[in-house]
Image (cartoon, helix red, strand yellow):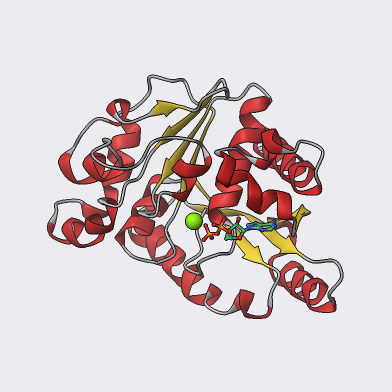
Length: 252
Ligand code: ADP
Ligand code: MG
């Protein structure tokens, strides 16, 4: 999940897609690549103090197995937490060998859980952490918030994706765009949605995530919205989005 814009729903999407997929029997790892550790919080995984985290994997070569934790009460769902230490990685990686491929290397060496999906929650920047995610990934999901500035900056993201594809990861595919925080009462939201669909066609999931208070409340209980309020509009939408993604994957 990448978009250098903050607050567009990267973390919410990572956590809730992961929860939905795992509740359908898939084995899913969420890699928290944001020093703020929001995905770790939402999955109730400790990420303060000297908890071993993604920073140590990227910078100190700690094996991923040593930081991955099982998410409580969610069988098949795992999290690689981020602590605030990860903020330093952006700078420390600069001088390292194969600095863009550190995450890929760690994930390749990690096969102990027989995972079906690995979801990487990127920070709101296009720095080396996001580049590491783009190099490690086969697919890119861009969440787009249905607001006026939503498309601003998207060109820059797409140029970076092209650069990564040419130089570092040929298999990177912008497979999915997800419209988030859709407010059906405003004409603006539907205009943005139409514009995104006109531009990106079938890459855009049919499912749109509505703006819903339940979605924003869930993390404070260390839960996905899918466990916190399964019948809410946000939970239903994320379950639909997960189903679409799973069926698309099966067609490939
Ligand atoms: P990002 O990871 O891109 O910075 P977040 O997923 O953290 O974005 O979302 C930003 C804020 O918006 C969070 O407070 C989150 O709870 C809230 N939010 C995300 N999706 C929704 C939604 N569908 N409805 C209401 N609030 C949402
Ligand atoms: Mg986030």
